[in-house]
Amino acid sequence: MSPDRHEAAPRQAAPIAIREDLRLVASMIDSGARVLDIGCGEGELLYYLAHERDVDGRGMELSQNGVNACVRHGLPVIQGDADNDLDAYPAGAFDYVVLSQTLPATRNPRKVMQNLVRIAHHAIVSFPNFGHWRIRLDLLLRGRMPMTALLSAPWYDTPNIHFCTIRDFLALCAEDGISVERSVTLDRLGRPFSLNPSGTLANLLAAQAIFQLARPGG
Amino acid sequence: MSLSVPSPTRAVPPLDRPGHRLDVAEPLALDSGVTLAPTTIAYQTYGRLNPGRSNAILICHALTGDQYVAEPHPITGKPGWWDTLVGPGKVLDTERYFLICANVLGGCMGSTGPADINPATGAPWGLSFPVITIADMVRAQKHLIDHLGIARLFCVIGGSMGGMQVLQWVASYPERVFAAVPIATAARHSAQNIAFHEVGRQAIMADPNWRDGNYQEHGLRPERGLAVARMAAHITYLSEQALHRKFGRNLQDRRGVSYGFDADFQVENYLRHQGESFVERFDANSYLYLSRACDYFDLAAEHGGILANAFRGAKTRFCVISFTSDWLYPTSESRAVVHALNAVAANVSFVEIATDKGHDAFLLEEPEFFATLTGFLEGSAEHLGLARA
Image (cartoon, rainbow over all chains, first blue to last red; front, top):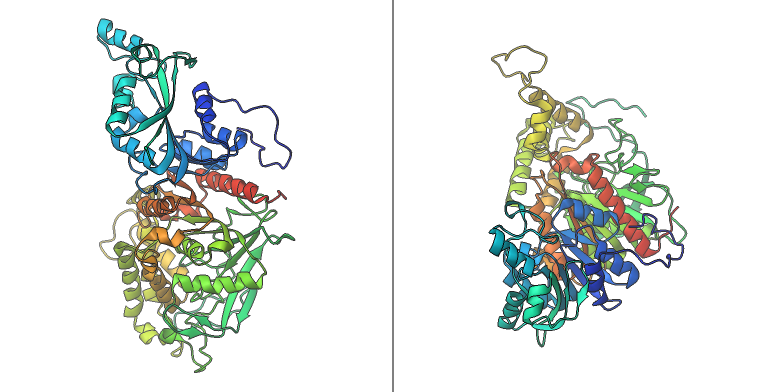
C-alpha cells in the first residue's frame, strides 16, 4: 500500500498490484458499488477497489493484525467473522459481499451463505475445490489428508473445517434457492479455465472457483 | 501557579482556573425537566481553527477527567491526561487540528456544577443541583461549539464516560459530527457498572463530613469518603494482570507483615495514595452527579429500545475501540455498538486492542491504539479533503 496516498497530488497511473484471484473478484464488481469484504485480511482487495474502482468498501476481519493494518490505511474495517457478525446487517445493505477463500473456515457455511445473499444483492464467493484431481489422488494413493498450495496447512493446524467440492457447493445453492449469476474456475496457477463450472471436468480440474450468487428476487 | 492543598477541614477556595470560559445566559433544558440558567462552560483549546473551520476535534473527558488535556494540571501540576496523544506532531496533532475540551456540566473544574453558588439562594447548590445526564452534557457542549462558529466537528473523541458523550453527540446532532471515536465505552451502563458507582456514592455519603451534601456551608470536605470511592473505582480501571505485575504481594517498606491494619502491601499503599491525591482536585458532590449521569445512560432506551435507531441516517464515520483486558467496559459492549451501527449500514471501523492494562489503557501509550487512531483520522481527513498542515 502506498504510504503517501493522502497527498493531494494526482493519483499515479500505474495500477495497484493485486493477487490474480482478487483481481478476478474485483472485475466482477461495478464501479461505485457498496461492498463488504469478509475476511479482508490486510485490506488488499478493499484498497484496490477503493482506488481503482471508486468503491464504497467495508471490511470484516478476525485477526487483530489484519484489522489494525486496514484501519491504519484508512479502510473501514471491523473485527468480526462471518459466523457471528452478519446477522446485524439489514437485507440489501450492500451491492456486493465478498467471501474470498474463507467459506471452509466458517462454522456454519450454510447460514453464512444465506446471510450473504440476504445482506447483498450479489455475493461473490471463492473457495478451494476439494474435488480437484490432485486432492482425490492424494487421499486415494497416499491415504493422507491432502495439502496443496491453497490448502497448505496440515490437518491439525488448518482453519478450514468445512471442505467442499464445486459440486457440493452448487448442490447447496440449489437446495437453498440461491442462483448462480456468474462463475469462474481457476487452475492451480490461478489462471481462468473455460470450463462449464457445473460439469464433471471442472470439478476434477479446477483448483478453485469463484461464484457470483444472488437470491432470486432478492 | 502555586496552590496549597486544601486541609481536610477547609472548603475548597474558589480557584482561578486557567483557560477559557463561556457564560451561557440561554436556559438549558435538562432531561430531568429542570431548566438551568445561567450556565458556565470552562474549556481549553489547542492548535488553531482553520479558515474553513473544518479541522475541529472535540475531546470528551471521562468521569474524573477535565479540560486540561495536554498541559500541566492547575491543581496537581501533573501532565495533562492525554498528553501522550495530544500535541505538535502527535496522534491528535495540534499543528493540524483544532482541539477543544470542555469540563462537563456538573463537573468541578469551572463548568457549572453542584459546588457552584445557586444564584437563586446565594448558597452552594449541593444536592439541590439538578440531576444531569450524558445528553445534558452534550447539550451544553453544543452551545460551546455554536459559540465557536463550528458548523461541523471533524471528530468527536473520548474514552469511558467521554465515549458515552461521543455516542450521544452522534445520536443528538448527527449532522454536526463527521467522525466519531468512542473508546472503551458502552451504549448503556451495565448492572455491574451501576453497582460499582453505588459503592462509591455510598462511601461519600457515609462520610460524616458530607452533611447531606451541605459540606461547603459547614466548611468541611468528605475527603475520606471520596478517597474510598476513588480507591474502589481505581481497582475497576485496572486488570488483575496489571495489578499483579505492578505490585504482586510485595510489601511496602517492610520485611514482614505487621499483624495489623497498616498498608503492609504495596497495592494498599498505592490505592491510599490514589485516594488521597484525588480528593485534592475533585468535589465529592460532583462525583455523585457525574457517576449518576453514567448510570442513567442508556442510548437504546431513548430510541424505543433499539440501539440502531440512535444512529439511523447518520453519515458519521465511526471508529470503535475496545481493550481486551477492560472488564469495566468489555469488548462485548463495544461490539453491541458496532452491531447497531451495522444494522443501519453505517461506516464503522472496530478494533479490539490486545493489552493487559485494563480500562485505563485508553489513557496510556499503546502503540496499536495510537496507530489505529492515526490511520482512522488520516483516512477521515482524506475523505473530508482536510489538507495536511
